Length: 161
Image (cartoon, rainbow, N blue to C red):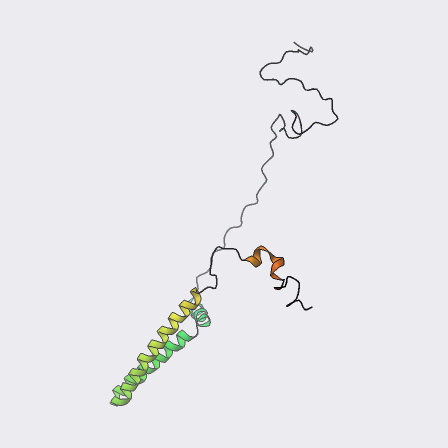
């Protein structure tokens, strides 16, 4: 077999293709749309290792108290008010002043109620969102060019420049 080329083809070989044209069409065998006969392997890109996560130090009591007071300042104020009315009521009870003791205990209950309402208000405010349809796309995010246009379709308010 050596250097001679046989005109017969085997099942593994494809018949020779005549190339009369200057360029092959993508729809002809051997054209631009056919994949190469030998597979090409590319090396996988080298991914740098991710940095190790940093451990957070535990939050101290003072830091947590400051953070909570800054986020929701009315709740600690309500707790201090309740504690004041409780202490004043107990003191007036100890001094045998029943009318003042009764007034302080009623004020204590009122401040407790107000503190609980404030707590519920903060919880509702933090969970409330103006996102009426979560997961839906906002038209101004899909088409930023339309968000800047007015109702008239031209730039500016009401067609004025």
